[in-house]
Image (cartoon, rainbow, N blue to C red; front, side, top):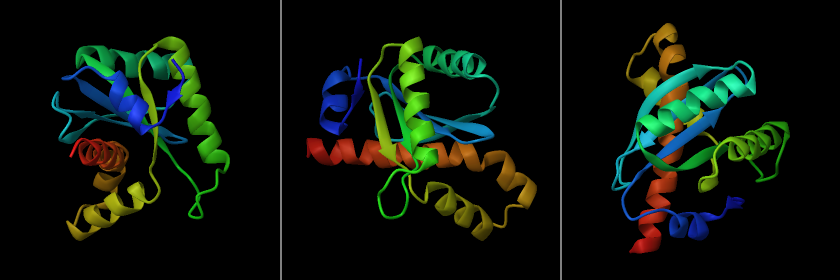
Amino acid sequence: MPLLDLPAFAAALPASAAILGIDPGEKRIGVAVSDTTRLIASSLDTITRAKFAEDATAILKLFDARQCAGFVIGLPLNMDGSSGPAAQSARAFARNLLGKRDAPLLLWDERLSTAAVTRTLIEGDASRRRRGEVVDKMAAAYMLQGALDAMQERRA
């Protein structure tokens, strides 16, 4: 299955099933999951990056355990909307993941998701250590929620 745009992604999903949100960073991969009605994204896990095969195994284990129907992967575009090395890496990650599991996949603009989550954690008085433990999976949830909201807007 190719990388899909939002309308094609939404059309490829069953009426009721969870979606796995993935924020692939250089050192860690944040993972989030939606509810089966695709209204709410929740933080799920953080995977420490290793070889891609190990990362994919861990991701697919979470995907299968939650009976997910598709993936939303964060695409870290530059502020001007252009693609840099991080966006190219996210696209390669997405293509490689599709090689392991043929499922609907959407790349979603995640500019500033980590910054927004970090700011929220600082305002909540979270320690630097605590922020480091949760920021990746919370950024994945923030990014996934944006995609879920966009799908809801299309239905309205």
